[in-house]
Amino acid sequence: MFQTYDDHNDPSLGAPHAALLRAELKRLSLDGFLIPRADPHQGEYVPPSDCRLQWLTGFSGSAGMAAVLGEDAAIFVDGRYTIQVREQVDMEVFPAQHLINEPVTGWLSEQLKPGQRLGYDAMLHTVREVRRLRDVCERAGAELVALEDNPIDAVWADRPEAPVGAVSLHPERLAGQPAGEKIAAIQASVVEKGAEACVLTQPDSIAWLLNIRGSDVSHTPLPLSFAVVPSSGKPELFIDGRKLSNAVRDELHVLTDIFEPAAFRSSLEALGKRGAKVMLDPALAGQAIADAVTRAGGSLVEAQDPVLLPKAIKNEVEIAGTRAAHLRDGAAYVRFLCWFDEVAPTGDLDEIGAAEKLEQFRHDTGVLKDVSFDTISGAGPNGAICHYRVSKKSNLRIPVGRPFLIDSGAQYEDGTTDITRTLAVGPQSAEMKRHFTLVLKGHIAISTARFPDGTTGAQLDTLARIDLWKAGLDFDHGTGHGVGSYLGVHEGPQRIAKTGIAPLQPGMILSNEPGYYPAGEYGIRLENLELVRAATPIEGGERPMLGFETLTLVPFDLRLVDRDLLNGSEIAWLNTYHARVLAELAPLLDDKTVTWLEQATESI
Image (cartoon, rainbow, N blue to C red; front, side, top):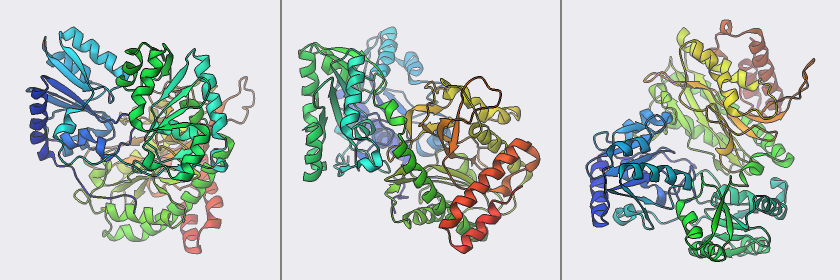
């Protein structure tokens, strides 16, 4: 099994760990320190050796930050984790604040005193973030102090070693484009920006550019590394050589010059010494990277990582791959649903049992590389925790009479999947069906949307919420995130959210996942992956439109649908989608599962 269920979070360690950190800060003549949930690459998935926020506080979510001063401290998380943080963290030691509504900058402006020295690890905070922090400190009369060595590392006695996962080649038959062509395109972007080199800090950008994949973090095939792409000539790749077999090294040597990570700073300083203009993404690059260039005499060209957009716009080979992956994954998922319907009503099934069985069905495909994230298997009140991670300690039996939420995905070499379904276990109340159907209406609204070129995810986000809003309800997360091609299950710049400012373009893959979560009761989320494509011309229309092709092939649970709340177009969409699911999956399934699927996809 790829997913483990051990719970290493102990809220009681918050106080002693904070005391250890404060003692180290005193030794360094610092009055405070910031601890982000980040590694030097600013990735969502970080190796255990970089889980400093979790070591300090117990919080294991994918986004957050803590601030520790002499007497005060706080932890900042977004709306996905407001319940989880209170279960994992000692609120007496680290009171929780909302990362967006009550940001760390606001807290610091109230807490910092003139003359105080606030430390931060300059590799773990981006250029853009440091500007905001510096402004707060200056207004408070305090000093923001960049540190080369993280003080937590000095007191974290059993800190794991950095990963050295093997790197593999991602063949052109799956990538759809040779790495040499990709490098040339990125170099053209560097020239266009007036720069002489570009620093890449995101491992998924490097993996896409060089057609490689890694194994340094759980569930996402990332090779933790840095790269410098000059306007002409070979890029430089900075990666632990132990990750490279002779065969992989030989292939990469044709494209790049390979160095150990320790040489990265020297390369940046060399660029600076010759006065080079160096392109970097201020939202992704650590402040230490920018400082290495500018202090040596270079200048910065701030621009979005030039790999993000071409990586997000999948080519036809990648699109064919993701369709194949979703067909395969849909068949595995429907086998799970057939099994679930037999076992769950007995009341003997628990959250871990369901997650393990779904992973087993995917493993039975024979080509599963990993799950794409830890399965969110939420029974009853655990389903109301948006990004709940089941552990042996939190594991609940799946109750009869409440919806069960399961959000999961798979990594195959030809594509990455992410699916959420909310399932009926036994009879469901009218209120549960009402909530489910309001969420379904939002899901259908996104799936059927037609929109002109240049439309952003923020402009579409309201469609997923409007029926919930009419009922006085909402959900505290984005409607959709970008998805990679055998890379991160979350990728940018595309997203459907209030903050989604990137225009949606053909070839982008996004999730469509509205939800509703009555605290302490249950959770509802319905998620498919959608591919942006040119839409069928609209009769009488004046402009070409874009729309979505649904990639996911898994039925929605009709036992939770209140038909009276759906209009004719919504019913037609649901029936058409289910007919497609049946037609495409039936040839891949055994007779028993086909019979189950026929019932599950009946027209309403």
